[in-house]
Each structure stands twice: as structure tokens, then as C-alpha cells.
Length: 173
Image (tube, rainbow, N blue to C red; front, side, top):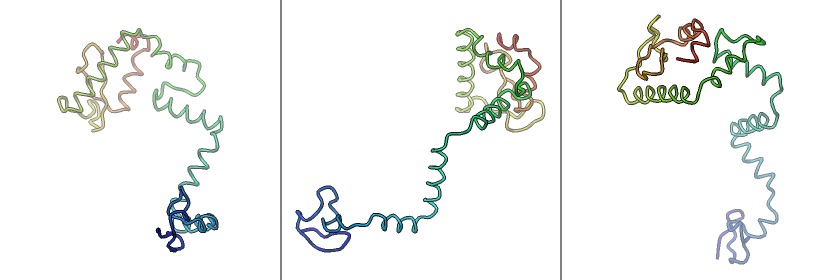
């Protein structure tokens, strides 16, 4: 004998749904799921709002204009003042990575990884910007041959340094 969670009647095992074992067959057949959903939505309005916002956002693909604006924001953030919307030289900024040999790419990746690990383990201290003293500085490798020989610069001054060095020279550093 089991007790139905919906109506509270005590019935035999055969009177319960084989997969929905907490409901008797009578409750299963007469259950109005719409009523249950309305009650749940009334009890959880913020969860419903979040779900509806996500559902609407996921259903509708972004417009080509929105994709282009997002791409331009990303490129301006990555390349700073060097990137101009619609400028003919933008492709050179993208090709910098493809012009490097595999050995040079590996050397850059290994230097960055070694420095990141050393900072995370506390062997090297992250210093403020060398120029202005801002505390949130990033590492600048003048040459990738020495992983730990870096100059700590804020994002603004790091962009300025890269703007001063021509792309052809930067490729071989």
C-alpha cells in the first residue's frame, strides 16, 4: 500500500503509475499541468523572468550590424589606437601571428606561460606600471628569449610601446 502525494489516498501498488510512482492513476489522468505551472510561476517570479530573458536572447540570432560592432569593439580593445574601423592596414595586425614561424610562436607561448606560472606561485612579484605607477600592470617582454626579463606596464603604456615599435620589428622579437 502506498499513499498518493497529490490526493492523499492510500492505494495498492497496481493503482499507481509505473513511472510516476508518487501519483495514483486517477491523479495522473486528471492532473492539470497548467495549474501546476501557474502555481510554480507565481511562487518563483524572478526565476521565470530570468528564464524568459535568456530564452528570448538565445532564440534570436544577432543582427549582422551587431556582430560587426562587437567585432570592432574587440579589435579596438586588442589593438588600441592602431585599429581604425575600415582602415586598409587592419589585415596586417591580424597577420602578425601568421607571419611568425612555429618556433617563434612556441618561444613566445613558453615565455608567457613560464612568467604566468612564476607570478601565480609567488616567485615573481607583479609590480606597478614602470611609467605611471598604476597597480594593475601587465608584463611586456622586450625579447622572448628571456622569459622573466619583463617590464611591467599599465595597459595604456603597453599599447604605446607596441605602437612605437614597427610590426616588422615586433615579429622578430
